[in-house]
Image (cartoon, rainbow, N blue to C red; front, side, top):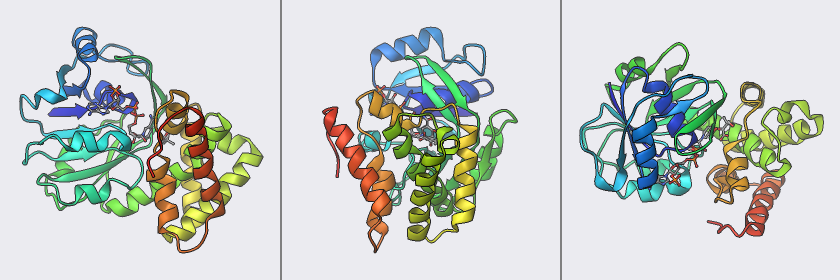
Length: 293
Ligand SMILES: NC(=O)C1=CN([C@@H]2O[C@H](COP(=O)(O)OP(=O)(O)OC[C@H]3O[C@@H](n4cnc5c(N)ncnc54)[C@H](OP(=O)(O)O)[C@@H]3O)[C@@H](O)[C@H]2O)C=CC1
Ligand SMILES: CC(C)(CO)C(=O)C(=O)O
């Protein structure tokens, strides 16, 4: 298959390294320097073990050929700038962002919109190196009805990089939202890898309370979602959450699209969420990072 991937950060590179073994992968970046590096060296992921060749392009120059699927692997905070580009109307576009803030933006698009959740951990090292820090699954669902989705997913799926179809995108994103509202802000505040959500009993207690608030708000079973949180914290135990990485690198975080989204949905006060959001904003402020409300 011919796969296009926009954004060569941690997740974009992870996807390109695994999918590039069996598919023709084109990657779209915004820096000439990164394009040159990727062109010359390909992508190296520690778990794949050898460099994988990709065709690199600048996004601003458009799409030189058609793709079977176009994957958008930028953060929520970078999504608007990417949505300004005109995408081919007959190509499905898969959005891999954490959070739920993007859904409304995808409903009116002229192309088939898919959303995905990534249950892996990945850490970008430089322009063409990525570490696979937690093995999991990529789940994909269609936002607008699409007959082709199952066929494309089964071509992407591989035993050592599972890609699975999910019938209900809201259900899928809600579960991942709960995972992220529990793991991401807490690991960022306490500056720990994901595994500490389980191994530090004090942190685990706070995490449980955050999970309860989220489940109550989103009308989900606490037992089921808490089990999923623990499972993902375990499989990505050595990973630094994407929010923790953003904070360390002085970038804007996705806290508003994740925890802020849940707080906005709630009819009652959510003290744990309120505290976490304020605390992440406060840390961002200390680092001189602009906060989007
Ligand atoms: N990392 C992880 O372990 C996980 C991340 N996720 C989610 O996946 C999504 C992606 O995260 P992650 O890969 O970590 O983020 P990164 O910050 O590592 O990568 C985002 C990439 O998007 C690029 N980008 C931003 N705007 C544009 C643009 N206009 N044109 C081209 N490229 C652009 C950035 O380019 P530049 O470098 O030039 O700024 C950067 O390389 C997030 O929503 C995150 O929450 C989900 C599960 C795990
Ligand atoms: C799966 C998990 C929790 C991996 O760290 C993630 O989604 C993130 O870091 O944003």
